[in-house]
Image (cartoon, rainbow, N blue to C red; front, top):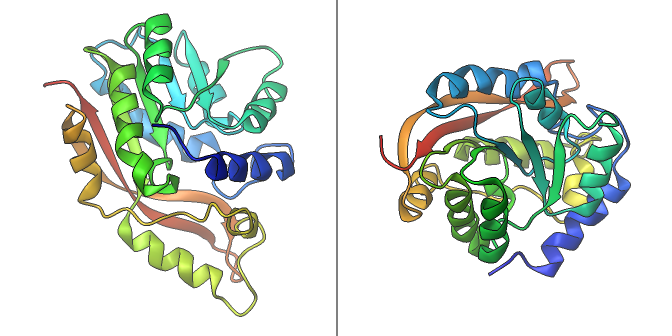
Length: 241
């Protein structure tokens, strides 16, 4: 099973239109506020920190490049070729490598695992943007990438974020400028129940080893000048303890 062509084309259209440069899209916040915060939770729990690290759903590679400064082999993976074009242009020194990947497609996940071996995986805000039927296959693909030794750090919008996003979209002034293209391209974030995320992991044979709550920082601001932050939940998972 793989993502629908409509879904893939929606992301292609979004990234073809997206401006260049860090911070140009809604979720592309500074790494020190995003991956840097997550790394402080993730890195101490890695049982094999020397494994390759896959930044799944890497987009334009802002967080990928940050992670590549800290791990010896980082792969930014995305299902959008246009997103990877952004990432490569922003990484002329080749700090990371980039890979077109539909992780919900079993054979693609298996092929990448065969090339890399077991890997640690970082995923931020990808599952809730998937079509509902692709969510379990995506988590199954992540489990394939982890193998026996890898660890997953997964960050997803909490249920409460859906209410906040709907409020932003329905404001009299319309959605904030950086959020508007997300809705326009038909990739408005979906709603995933908080309890569903660990259930997907369990079904994929993964054990939740730690979890918590954090705000998901965006690049957009409210009319009063405060930065928009959305409630999110993080989970650390792997095979066994």
